[in-house]
Image 1 (cartoon, rainbow, N blue to C red):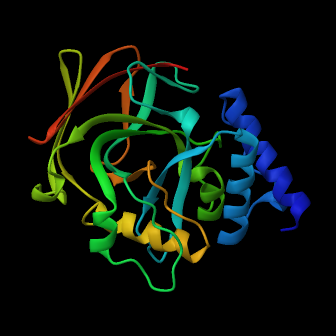
Image 2 (cartoon, rainbow, N blue to C red; image 1 turned 30 degrees about the horizontal axis):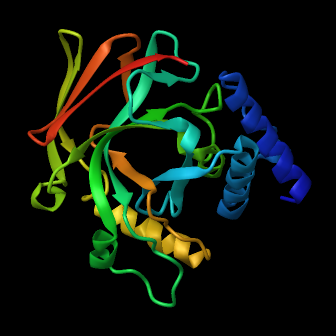
Length: 255
């Protein structure tokens, strides 16, 4: 794709963000077919958003998704309830996750970062909810590069309490229980999709470094849902129990 096509695709995705209403799939001539084009569109959308990057979502690479990450902007990260969800009406889509807040920069270097080095650069772990929503009205037929261009359907991040002493916890798997008011919405044996949340974080640090970018101190990085995507009611007190690690409480409102 040339610069004009990349810019046009980014402006359409940005317009859907601004209107808080998903739009049609990109025109055929503006659909990215490579990861490089998708990331270029993603970056251009970020320029149009005009807010600093305050975090990332990421997952470990697979054959189908060899590069899967997206910046989360400061305007979309909150730690106080209620959280206004763009475009939400009666329900919002979320993913219960564990995120890491970085304490030290991980800048580009000649050798890859080892998992122990990434772990040593972490300040704390947090219970979080990723807020999910596509800018495509019907995301079913879109290809992965189109999804990547749309920030892998990220709408934002609600940051909950600190998870004390995370390295002593079985972060690979634990029960998830979701309550809405007095109703139990879900009880599930949660399992991290990449085995452990430190794995995708280590991949992200090395991927950014390979692009000449730094995973910076202060950024919050969320790494994958323990029970997939959930639709939960808005304007209702929600409570998410992460095994015996702690509880995240929030109300989601129409944004």
